Image (cartoon, rainbow, N blue to C red; front, side, top):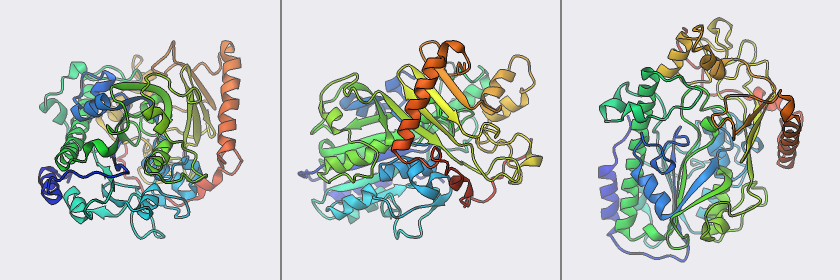
Amino acid sequence: MKLRLAAIFALAVLCSGSQTLSHARPNIVFAIADDWGWPHAGAYGDMGVKTPTFDRLAGEGVLVENAYISSPSCTPSRGAIITGQQFWRLGPAGNLWSVWPSTFPEYPRMLAGEGYFVGSYRKGWGPGIHPGTPVSPAGKIYKSVGAFFAARPQDMPFCLWFGASDPHRPYAKGTGVASGVNLEKVHLFEHFPDSEEIRSDVADYYFEVQRFDRDVGKLVGVLEEMGELDNTLIVMTGDHGMPFPRAKGNLYDSGSRVPMAIRWAAEVPGGRTVTDFISTTDIAPTFLDAAGVAVPSEMTGRSLLAILRSGRSGRVSENRDHVVFGRERHVVAQEAPNMGGYPARGIRTDKYLYIRNYAAGRWPAGTPDYRKAQAPNAWLADCDNSPTKWFLWEHRDDHELKKYYDLSFAKRPAEELYDLAKDPGQVVNVAADPDYVRIRKALAVRLARGLIATGDPRIEGRGALFDAQPYLGGSPSYPKP
C-alpha cells in the first residue's frame, strides 16, 4: 500500500521544534520518483499534469532542460546515482534485480563519514540485494520521514533520500479521469496512436505523478517549518521514463530523459533554465562538492555547482554538449536459452540521437511468443503490462496501427539515428540514409570514445558478463496473450 504522509510530516515538524538552524554546510534532500519521465511536469509545458511542487522548485531554483539517466532501468539507474558513475562500471549491478557491489564509493556513506546524518525513506537502491552492506546503499531506511527527523541529532546537517513508489505500475484504472485529469490535455509521444484507451492510461500515470508531487510538497513544507529550506540543496527527479511501451527500458527521450529541478536558495540564484546536458551520475559529485567533500577520482559524473552558482541560463558550460547512456538486461525476456538482455548504448546531442544496438537479433522488449520465452509467460516482458501495451498488441495487424506496434516491439537494426530538428519524436530512423553517413560515423566514434574512456565492458568485448549474472527477481509473470 502506498503510504499517506500527512501525519508523518506533522510529526517531523513537532520533532524539529520549529527551530531555525544554520549550518556551514547545506542539508541535502534527494527526491526521486519511480518511473517518472520527461516532459511530464507543468514547468516543461505539459498542461495535462499538475506539479506545483516541482514547478515551485524549478521557479525558485534551476530547471534542467536536458537531464538524462545512466540506464532506463531501476537498479542500474539508482546505482549510478549513488556511486556517481556510469552503470556499466558497477559489474552485476548493471542489471535489474542484481547484487550491490560494495567496493565503490557511495555518496551517502561518504557524507555520513563527514558528519552528516544520513537516511532514506521508501525506495532506495534496487530492486536487488546488498549482502556486503549492512544498510541500504541509499542510507539507513527509516519507517517515516518523521522517524528520520526524530532520530537526527540537534544541529546536525542531514542527507535524506526520499524515494517514492509513484508512479510505478500497477495503476487503479480510471483514477486519472476520476481525479479530474483532462484527457484532451494528456501528452502523447509520437510513437503512440491517439486513442481514448491510451490517453486514459496516461491519465492514470499522471494521477500518481501528482501524488508524488504532493508528497514532496509536504516535505518542503516541513523544511520551511524547521527553518531549513533555504540551506537545503534539493534535487527532484525520476529514475527513468514512464512505464509505457518504447519508454522505460529504452534509450529514446521517452525512456532516458527525466524531469529535474534543483533548489538551494542560500547559494543558487533561481528563476533559471539551463540547457547543459546533465547526467544523473552528476548528482553524487554535486552533493559531495556542496558539502566540501573531495570527489573520488573514479566517479565519472561531474559536479554541477559551477553551473548552479553561475546565475546564468541556457548553455552554461560549453563542454556539456552531449550525454552518454545505455542499458543491459532489464528482466529475463528473450527466447530460450538466451538469458541476456538487450544491450545498447546511446549518445544524445542538441541535434541528434544515435543508438548502437549490440544484439540486434534479440527482441528489444522481449519475445512476443511466450511459448519460446526463457522465463514462463515472459511475453514482451521488458515492457510493463498496461492498457497501452494491450492496445498495441491487439492492433498489431491493423493496417493503420501496425507501425505503432512495430516502433515499440519489433526488432531494431544495429544502428539508429534520429535528426531531432526534423523528427523530435524520434520515430524516423535515418541511420541507413546516405545523406547521414558522415553524421552517423562521427557520432559512432564519439560514443565509442566515451565508452572506452569510462571502461565499458561491452565495447571492450566483455559484455557477456552482464548476461551471465543471475537474475534475482524470479520469473516475470506476464499473462500470455
